[in-house]
Image (tube, rainbow, N blue to C red; front, side):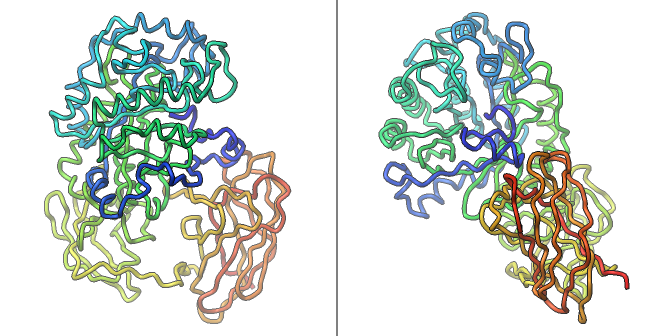
Length: 592
């Protein structure tokens, strides 16, 4: 995985990511001439992807020679990810490789690992076959730098995991670092090489290491998934070599990180959940349980079960999968805090899994921050993370025939107000993580998509947010509920727009804007304008960093005419690299 969340995997994008604190999309011009799935029909793709789309929840396993070092090399603890220790500490190739002679994970048991995943409700496993350190976690015939030949362990964990998954009825896939390889000559190093032993020709590396190992993995294990990492500039000939065995595994799914203009099957947001998912693309958020992917003994910053489980539901409600990582220790044990959390998630899924597995994304775009929706046919599953009175569905036009708690089958009162908002009564008993309500509809799902989306609050004010904005150009919504923001505002032609339903007669409004900005790129000016030709101009002031949001009063007032009015936020002048990371604007009726 990446060295740090938000570090560009394409070196030329480092400045953008330092700027925006957001993870990039792995996109490149399509190379259909060598894309193994370029000629696939929609029907065939749907058939190939069906199990993956239904699965929703998988286990990522980062385990390699880096586990032996456990976050420290030559007595020096690393500040970065455990699996990046060779790179971060600039460990000499031979010295790092020598650690393999002491790597003996005698407590590794594939059946135990698979049982943990199955008890957690996970439907597939993706395990590192070779990470950036170049050490193969299976018995490869390509060279001797592997767990069978180079360690006293003399076993093949990938083979054992593949067999154990097959017995348990869980799909098995492999992660393979095809671009970065800090051990083999010619592999990319993410920055300058630090050891002469790394010097070599990349094309030769592909031909002698990468392509042969991919062929081995496919022919030996028939993996359901190949999870590539860190795309590079691959030639068409290199791609042909790497994918030569793909026809031998016709159901194979692979992600968007191969490189060379190959889009792959799945988008891979890392360590975050995209607020609106991906339109017309399958996607999967990969995330750590603590802060690191590979084992690091000093990392005890474990996310709570509540956060992890609500992440799963949030992702499912947006049409994605959750690939949640474990980092086994050097003895072959998955750390107990990770196991505990997985067991708790599994217990919830045992009762509530029907509201997650096989569901589709919510068609409702404007739910309160504590609610999510998943869908099966004409049934909505309403997920309420915490109760603040009754639950509401602002956009649903179809009548709800009945509302029943999934656990306990308690019937709840349903009402529909004159404003069109459907209300579900709060149950007497709440789930500590997520209370699921089964909503049976009177007919096909119909959603209110009228343009007057943003309505005045009881005090007459309007709040427009990043999530509600219509965006142009390269702007992207990022973050997690309720704190979404719009970033990547590096083109001063890009803009954000909202439609407001303004009461008859209209009026003048004061404005407050919330954003963040790095100290080195302040000074942009921006216009907040309305379809009534009224404009306020503001200047971007310092907030102290991209992750520090502040609220500022804008000068003067802006006029909104009655009826549906459009407001636009656009850059007027951008002296620095970017305009801002935008979060929200509050418009309040001006006092006379």
